[in-house]
Amino acid sequence: MKEAGWYRTGFLLGLCVRLWRRAVRLEVRGREFLERPAVLALWHGRAIGLLMERIGTDGLVMTSRSKDGALATGALAACGIGAARGSSSRGGAEALTEMGSILAQRGATWAALTVDGPRGPWRVVKPGTVTLARRLGIPIVPGSFSCSRPKLLRSWDRMVVPKPGSRVVAAYGPPIDAGALPEDIQAAVAMVGKAIDALGASLDLEVLGAELWPGG
Image: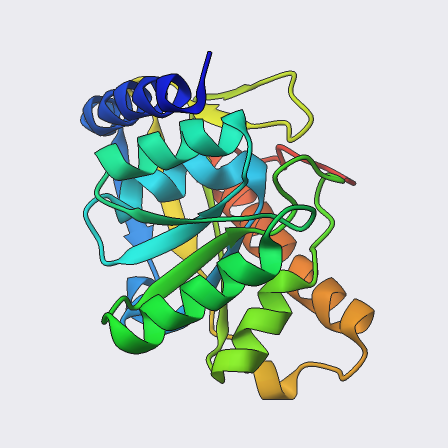
């Protein structure tokens, strides 16, 4: 299938997400943290609940330059969310520049990166998140979700999928000032990863009584 076909398939999936949103009970916390420009950092496997919450909001997401990226771009478009194409291995620098331009000039208030995507390693933050936040002088907001009736896919990202009828709690943690992160990039990305993990674990314990991703 050519890229246009993947995009159309993704668009149909995005329409399904919009319908799916009506089949769950969605609660949101910390939405105010994205009312000012920020980089939203989340794990690839915890994207669906946050996508449901962000439908129709003024932001954009980095997607890869691959068929998977075309699929994701189509799904985002159906949900009213823009995309910048690139990844850590292909076109990442150009995508970060595009995201910065949109945030600075076109009024978008948030830019999201699935920080371990598009292909892993699982729950390992890549440097682009910190690079973008430092370049623009804006904070990083960790995001995650949990749900009462989850299905864990057997994919590299252990994707969490809420079943119909689930209670879905999407949450955004306190902003992390990019200027307060360690100068060492590895230490900085590790701090971001710990913040995302802590948020997800707390939601799991509240909603399910146990962590969906214990250990790592």
